[in-house]
Image 1: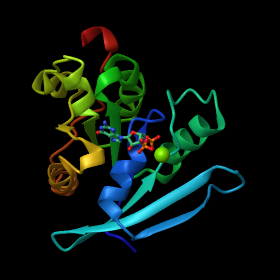
Image 2: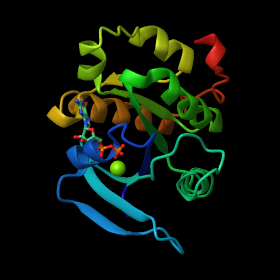
Image 3: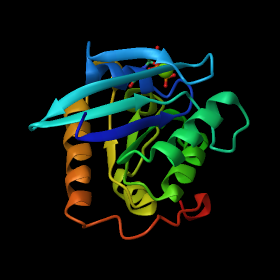
Length: 183
Ligand SMILES: Nc1nc2c(ncn2[C@@H]2O[C@H](COP(=O)(O)OP(=O)(O)O)[C@@H](O)[C@H]2O)c(=O)[nH]1
Ligand SMILES: [Mg+2]
């Protein structure tokens, strides 16, 4: 039994699997979601004596259950109640990706938001104010370039700190009441 269970969520092609692989390496298990033909990947990684199990959720644009993938993602978040949700955003398509992020944050689980594809966003001349985004979402924001494993160490540290913080009863105080308009 791992010490913590966390989930990795995001739109299709945001870079979830790349980040999942960077975190877990060879410590992966591939199966199917119960009763579905959709692949379920889970894996383990260790940090500071802590064993963390991570589930790579199917890509989803929302939790509105418009597709089997969205149903699986939503049901897992609601029923398995992971200790933390890492939402991977494609920084080059931030506005579209924020829709899912806001829905996940509204569930109230501790969260970390990943701005992946930071290289693509930069090459397109997009500048993102990480600090402001973090304040609006009420969640830590970590910038990554998954394909080059940039930012992964920072992500692991941030996830760990959030898990520990929760165990100390420090947060989150209440579900984030975030709306896209306020961003
Ligand atoms: N340029 C760039 N490509 C990335 C980055 N992260 C992942 N990719 C690529 O984006 C594509 C989709 O990534 P994948 O992990 O399969 O996305 P998923 O659908 O969310 O699991 C793959 O070709 C990755 O190699 C990144 O930070 N920058
Ligand atoms: Mg994937």
